[in-house]
Image (cartoon, rainbow, N blue to C red; front, top):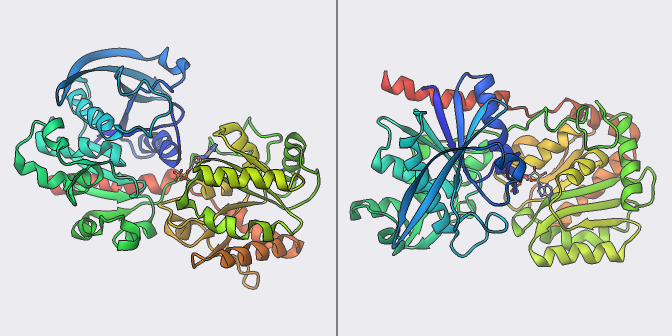
Length: 473
Ligand code: ADP
C-alpha cells in the first residue's frame, strides 16, 4: 500500500475555512516525506480559489456526471505544488458561488463532487491503494467506492473532523442521485434521511477522528449528534489520531507576517504585543492580552464568554477577537468593542495575516468549547508561545494540561464543566499567574517545550495504511 488519494473539500493554501483546510494542506507532505507514501489530493475547484493557482493548473480530462435529470460536466485539472499532486474538479453550476458552504443544495453539490471523484479515479494515471475521505462532503465518495469498486482492491479510510455536520438530505435523493439498487439504500440512510457522513461510517474499512478523547466521546449520545449506534457498531475500526500543526508554516522564527520574529516567549513577544497594540489603537503597554480566533458558532462556547465578559473586563486586561459566524455573537463582540474602546477590539472577518499577528502578540488564547474534535488553534497558539485557556473536551483535553503552580507541571489552563463561572474563575487564575513573574516563568517554560508536529500523527496514519498490507498478506 503506497498510493493514497485524499478527498476533501478544503486545503491550504488554496482554500480554507477552518482546521480541515490546515490538516489537508499539511498531512500529505508529512506522509510523503517521513513515511514514503505517494499521497495526492482531490478537491473541488471553487471560484474562491485565487487566480494565481488556477493559472498553474493543467487540464487533464472532462466527463459528464449524471445527477437525477441533470447532466453536469466535470472538468479535471492538476497542479503540482511542493511535490504533491493536487487534482481539482470544476463545474460551472456547483462551484462558481461565493464562499464554499452554506447553500440549500450543499448535499447535492458534494454528491456531484463524490461521483466525479469516482469517475476521475478511473481516468487518471494514478491508481490509489487507499481512498482517504475527510468529513461529510466526501462520505458518498467513500460509499460509492465500496459499492462500485472503481479500482480493484481499493481500501477506504474516513476521517471525522466534526460529526456535527453530516450532509443530510431527503431520502428521495437516493433514487434521484444514484443509479443503485435498493439493497444499497440502508447503508446510506439514517433516521429516514440520506446521510453522507453515515454513508461513510457504514462503508469505510477504517474510521479515524482527530483526537483520542473525541474518538471516545462520539460513541456517546451527547457528542455523537445521533450517530453513536453506528460508531459503537464500528468501534473496533475507529481510532483517534491527534492532528499536528505545520511547524514550518506556523513558526514565529520564520513567520513573515508578524512584527518581530522570535524563538522563545522571553523577549520579542512583548515587542509584537506593543506593535500590535499600536496598529489596532489599543493603549500600548505591558497589559495581559487575551485573544479569540474562531468561527463564532455555538460549538465554541461563546455563550459562556458572553455571560462573564463584562465582569472579566473589570480587570486590567485587553481582549481581541477575530472571527465570523452567528450574527448574535458578531454583534455581541462588536458592541463590547464599542463599549470598551480602551480594552476590546473585534475584527469580524477572516484574515490569515491578522490571525498571525494576534497569535504572536497575545499572552492567552481562549477556547471554552462545548465540544471540540481537535482544536488546531491551541496547537498554533503553542507554536507562538501563547498560553491556551480551554474547556476539557475532545482534542483540547489531549493537548492542554492544566498548570499546577506547586508542581510546576502543565502548559495551559482548563476547566471541566460547561459553566460560565468556571471559565471566569480560570481566567482570573490565569491573570494571577501572569502577574507573578516567578510562577509565570514556570508555565512559559512548559509552553516553550510543547509542540504538536505532524511526525507522530503521520506515523499513526502510516501504521493504519500498512495494516491493510498485513490483512492482504
Ligand atoms: P475549526 O476547524 O472548528 O474551525 P480549529 O481550531 O481546528 O477550528 O481550526 C481553525 C483554523 O482556522 C485555525 O487555523 C485558525 O487560525 C483559523 N481561523 C478561524 N477563524 C479565523 C479567522 N476569522 N481569520 C483567520 N483565521 C481563522
